[in-house]
Length: 402
Image (cartoon, rainbow, N blue to C red; front, side, top):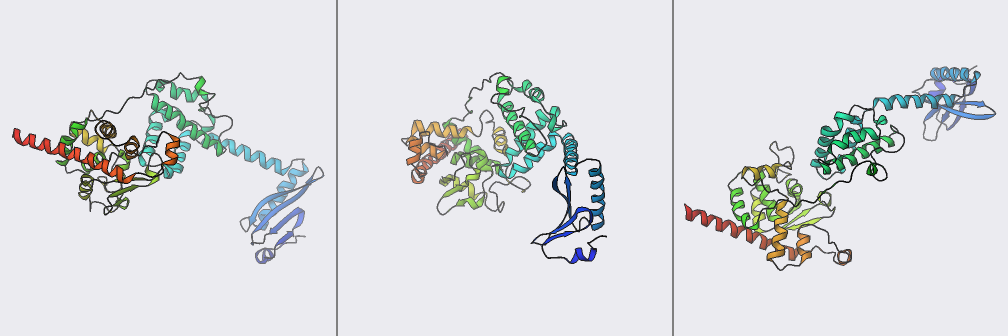
């Protein structure tokens, strides 16, 4: 006769084990949870098999489960072994149904909050869409082998080497994540060292310097930018005055600026080196910022829909509009560095810190822990003077011609 009743199950709160018939036990924990357990003996060894919690699993359902497992035991089948086998079969079914595209999108969604800017998310999504998904997108993530990864990489390995190498790393990361989720077994077929480095030719990735605008063209170009009313033009101006990177400028927030002190403080999470960077603001930079005030409560350079910051290619587009498309936005940093080396007497470390570059000499970097803000302010003011004088000369020359 059964020992447990519905009313007892609902009311019992005292921690302990309460036995029903045929080895069925209700365990009540100190925090009040109630769990079903089947206790059985097989080959002279005692085993406990969890059946779920009460009231999710009712008394009737628990007893029916016990009857099923007791039938297995009468045939020499261990319920724990049978459950493990069923779980493994279910895992195989699940593994066969999860595609590479699904796992890649899951990986991007999981990690996008830790990536520095939205452009990194776009680069991941676009590169996978263009080169990986056509071949691997609908394949089960657990079935991808070395030959499949090579099918993606070989056609682009020497044609677009930088993209190909990044894609290899992205495929590897997605497959590692899939393995952690028990969707794959074995070695990663996209692994580089000791694997793909033996199957793919060595890439010739010569460093090509960014196409940089000559310093003498900055003044006339600033005058051209000033003639435009666009947000992208103002962003390009700040890019030039501060020698910062495009993403640092496009994602600038008003909360980062201290106009009284003339300092722009960029958080470490937005910096390539992962360190806070203080930028001294020249008069030209502040004037540019003042033109953007009131356009968005958060972003200095909002996008057209005012839903976020300016997209990364906006500065490039405005340069194309002004027929300066032979140069790239990042090239202004090269222009600044060349000018500071050839036309000023500022030490190398001042010029490098202005670009938020880490000092190459580790001993020097260990002892020099300041950011030399005051000296960098002098350098940036001289840079702004070069630009403003060039703009004035361009204006006078244009006036004389007219």
